[in-house]
Length: 228
Image (cartoon, rainbow, N blue to C red; front, side, top):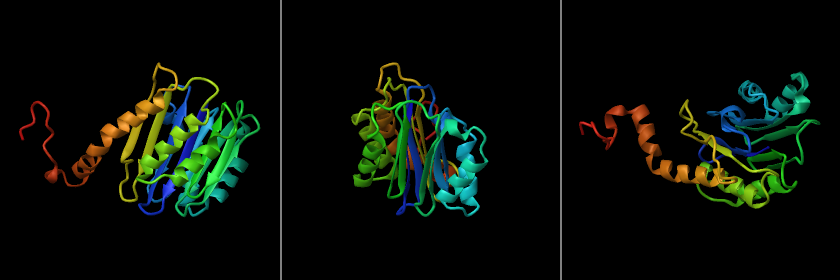
């Protein structure tokens, strides 16, 4: 029902996640980032509280593995959950409970972790990790290349209808990339649509950062009613 990639860029200090699913609005309840702390994913039969809990523990100083171990230990019905986290040092951890749906798998790599359930095959997370590790460019671009590799490797057993990309920088309290395709009727097209949204957003991203930090330096909006 879902496959995802969670990662860190050691050069920029960014954290991010990318996810896709047959379910509607997958990113709204599964993906979490926290500046200078880490990124986390909570999926399968999803409990949206577990992603922030993993990041809380990382912010308190626990490593990704220590945070995961504590969440698994303290969480009732954790066997229905699939979880992943990357910490500020690039440490990774993932967990798939015994009740994870369908064909499921996980893979950890350098600064990244991938996982999925109800997959077409067990090789998909490893394909995502390999693509991410080999990719160049921004963290968002590398995440997209990872999820595209997951689709190319077989994707989900069923049709994909939603996708999301979430990235936080080290110096902004809000995610500078928060792009979602909440529902796409055409099966398996949500990832391509997310790629299109990213391509349109990228040239404008810096302008939105400037508006938040130094609004007096903002470029004209170029819309009707703009006094500039």
